[in-house]
Image (cartoon, rainbow, N blue to C red):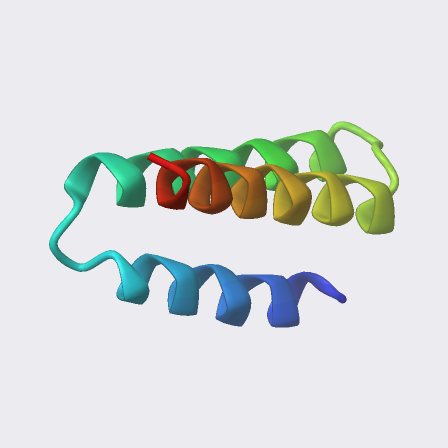
Length: 65
């Protein structure tokens, strides 16, 4: 997944939680953290994969409650 696909995926995830501002904020923070790490020289693929994994864990963890 490249940055454009990551943006679209993240926007879709945020849209799925339109009524949960806390979850939307956490997703947004993970998105911007990944972009920041990429700008600082991190591997684009690694940082995006890590953020996607973290967002999925956030969502999956919430569904288990």
